[in-house]
Image (cartoon, rainbow over the protein chains, first blue to last red):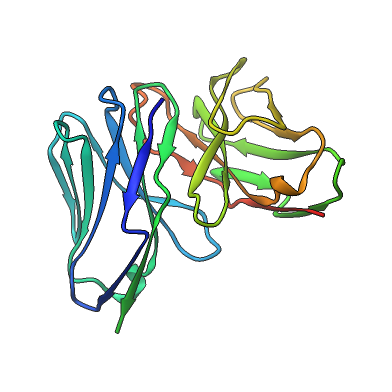
Length: 111
Length: 114
């Protein structure tokens, strides 16, 4: 089955810096890769996703890149703000099959 | 449109008790899943369903049962609660189609087993 590894587990940056979170997956058939943001005590919320036929996707300050050959994908946040502080989860899905999550990255943005 | 509704929000059980966590969605989503979230372990899939009458096991199914008699509801049953089942439980749903769609999560149920 699919296995998703996520690094780093914690990431501290200064406001205005960029943050990068990386994930690798094991199943080459996986074709959908969402990213979720979870604030303390809240539910995970989808922030961006990418399908396997696309190499990069941007939405304002966030972007996701996908390298199918290496089986890894990354979340990039530019011009970080204190409200970006949260736990971020990557995930991978194979078509109709189950969605498997990484273990999460705690991002702390200091003013 | 309430989205994904989970009840109860908090629950304390004694070891050996049984209970059902409720999950309902009003978005006509085909896919529904149950996850548990433990510190440092991310979200682990318990059971999932791709439509009414169809369920399958996830990564950590032992001690849990599910059924999907309607599109809207996907209850999770704890058969005999154990302290190891203390966790935050999230229900999630998504549109089916190609399967390449993000999940919408409920607000979670925080369960403590003593």
